[in-house]
Length: 368
Image (cartoon, rainbow, N blue to C red; front, side, top):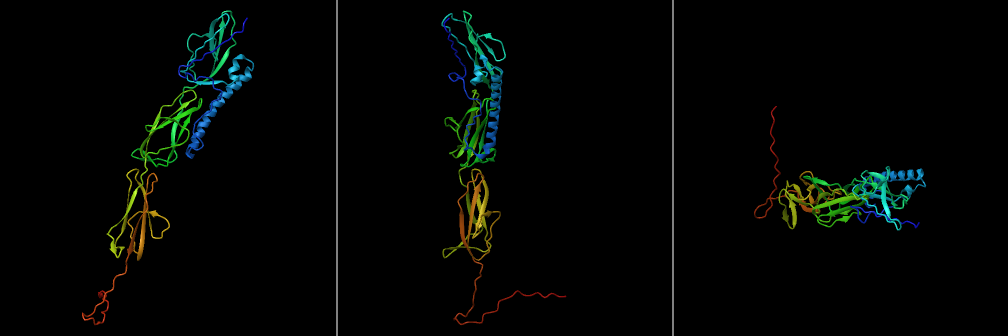
């Protein structure tokens, strides 16, 4: 009898053109490279742990099959570790041909079941690792040696989250951040592992996530993101509106009394004090710092500053907003004169007179 040739055509409804058997064992693939910020390390470890669990299950099943029936035809697919990751929506069809007496029928069975005639597309609803055994029989009664397709059914979409390298500052429920912040997108899939992560910024086209991203545009930005596992499950698209504050706060030093200009120098009047005002229209002012004369470090501004030391002075001030933007340093130079003037009296013709004694406050006699 001539040799029989058999052909299997596997067709899927949801993964058309991409249903060839994969030869890799399931591992998580977060797509987050080593450059991801330190805060994401713990989450990445969870992803790896979840993937290792799925991989361990696969290896256990493969190992059990190999040891139990090392020479059985039904273990061919398992021995070759050809694992196809699918969802329960994936369907299969079977086709066969015979060059001699023609094909009579095709039959198949699940891993733990009996052979049945193939009449309609095959679907497997139960999640986890399983097998599809299939064969054809010609009209002369020749039965094909059963073939095995090893599949892993996964109906659970990955979990995905966005992790900033710097904490947000929330104002009226809106997250504010600086332009220097970066964002890692972390995905986790405990079944078959993450295949890819997708994201988009504002109205830009979607991209495949490979490394932490940054927002270049000031103001409100929208990041949308999702993840797809190796079975084709895609998580619902998540989005986050982030307001990027790239505007520095403003600061000014205001004396309580106007400075007096004398020969090009500014003098503070007696009793004058200095106020420091700061403003930020985005995330708001977090703190104001001041430094007087030779002070080495800026100190927090808490109240009006009074200077009572003779001579020239320089008062400096800066402001920092709630996302870390720092204002320019402003400074005010002024002089303090604590020495009163001295006057003399003389006759109109210029003759000197005896200078009167300085007056003293009258004493009040206290009676016993």
